[in-house]
View: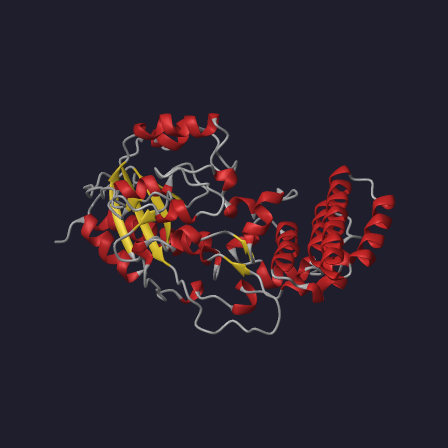
Length: 391
């Protein structure tokens, strides 16, 4: 008869889980100093679980943990249909394509737990087995659990890199009080390669698997306030997330898997037209983006990012829509719209400076006023350049 572990592995394949591994639930002591240093240096994003002890000691949140069952699901890196070139479009990073991966992973984890529970009767075990499933919103560090369970190794960019699927995988795990044989951890496999570190546009990667999360463009696209100026140009047209460090990784070359239909991207959702995003109602936002992982922070960050992307793409045709955003009740939208006008209004600097000076008289928010002054200065500088070229 197959062992319980063998049965779980077989069932995981039937459920569409692409990779599974088993690790001990011993403390992740080796991470403590690193996590504390990251926190003390201000390198954490604030999206992490706040209690370090609970992140490294499974017993703090689960009574008598014995095993961590780690799973990985591969996601696609290329859309099946071409992106239209009809007008300026933004894009979501690949990890936000399709239905929110949290929902997909929770479904697989719950179905796997149901199967394991049913094995208790088959194996004449007492009904004392307990389980705690979690995705990246839980206490444990997913990549650390997955690495210990043999799914892959943690690369210089801090992501789990698998042999079969590269780093294009979603991770989840189940903590349980069942004792199961552990798999062998995967050793570090980056060698001397530092392509991800070199390619990171904001120098967020520290090169040892850690990062300054606040410098990561993925983090910056998810904040709700004014995006610092140094990140705006570097954002390009990506309005949620960042996968540059994945795209340059040799382990990801040629990786593109389409195993799960619910992960398939809809072009109008993951490469959305930017101009319509500026006037989206809450209802329309939920209908178009509500099921994406990239919608979790709400409408405001994505609309702010759409304004930045339009400026980066040279979307002067959107200036009337951008001007309308200067009347928005949200200061972040007003301020970002003003910045975009400063970038896009350089062909008619005098006209836009008149408009901005009028806005300056009416504006009360200090941050927005600062953006207005910056935009005026930008247009004045552009106007002087034009004059020198004509003289």
